[in-house]
Image 1 (cartoon, rainbow, N blue to C red):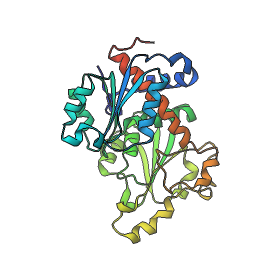
Image 2 (image 1 turned 90 degrees about the vertical axis):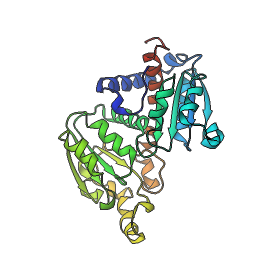
Image 3 (image 1 turned 60 degrees about the horizontal axis):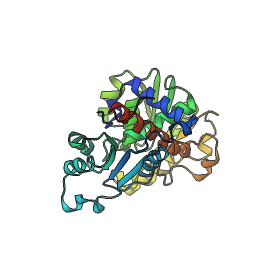
Image 4 (image 1 turned 60 degrees about the vertical axis):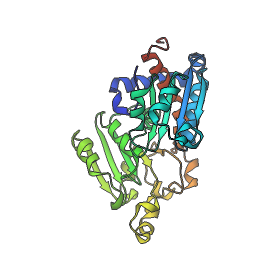
Length: 310
């Protein structure tokens, strides 16, 4: 039995295999519409979620399976003081596979030690959101056809953004990737990410504070929110906030095949006028989340011997 707690749990070959499976699901939906007949997915969401929870549920339904679970801790026995380990041990009696989101870092790993069913980490605090990273990789593959030889701009809150950290780690395993890190000085990529991932893998990167300076170089622009509460003072926030709002004017010098991504939810960091630009792929990215979760469910069940290999 295998769990999926972080993208580093998978080899590059396994990641590529899951991406290819997702592409085949997109091209041949009917082929997979009954592959999970009789199987049950439990969604254990100890904190609120919209896209992640619903995309997991939609994914299992489209594979022919069923869904059970809860959408907040208050509606589970956690509100009575039950431990995560006990909750998961019991739920694994009822479900073939479990998708779990929890506000505490490392909770899915604790759950995996108790579970008799595969655990998929659907987000644990500020630590990791690996299915979002797999969604991002599928989007890049569909739009660019490759993971190598790309210049990727990461913009916004690069200090606390778990999606950014996970994506850097995942892409660091591919060749000739350059990162352009666009953020206010207060929200730069943490030093441990630079040391342990960027520098260790000899990846080229630069840090800038204005996206206009580098827009013409980018193959991909990955936007994230700059949150007011991350700044030391209101003055610092007001000084920076407009510099990290993407609008059509900032795209004037961008490549015609630029791919604009965002993990969502969006607040005001991408102007709605950008939505109609053919380079805006963040809603396609959300749809890709359903397909990649279908692929992950299939592979984990197959690796656990609960589904035949296709």
